[in-house]
Length: 126
Length: 93
Image (cartoon, rainbow over all chains, first blue to last red; front, side, top):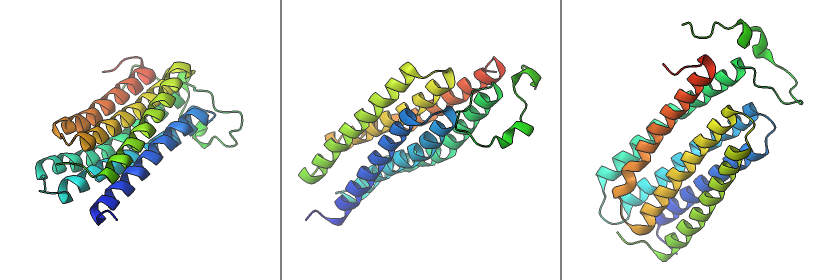
């Protein structure tokens, strides 16, 4: 029976890998860009955060604690949680404005009233 | 810092999982009908590469490459923002 910190590391590592693979499979299988972003943005962020946290647990509890690397890992998790939603949102907005075609199965497009598509949008002006 | 046989097995399995995810993302980058699809796939690909770096650090017990993790995070964010702005406005700045 491995010690507890190794079990925690292994669990976080396996869960993170699973979520990353799920994000990739969603990227492959979903019908249009916005569904794909749904898979990649959520599962991808949590997956990579769990993998880095597994490394942080290993750095702190296996042998001598290595705080310098552990802090960099926590910083990477914080960056990931701050930046990935912003990047995904910006890409989705850009794709919607430039008239990315929605999937045939799309039932409701509530954004149509609020975000004009490209011909009405003043491109190049702030 | 040496790694126990149990964690070594788990790390190798996770490495296989990350390479599978990277292969799927590369396929989406190749076929992705438009530039936005490729940008999203590139974002996920950088996540998978971060995972590969972390797992290799754990396997080798060498943590000097750990800096690449947060650098890749920031560079991936800047790349996504640049692509999004270029798609939306036709220029980056």
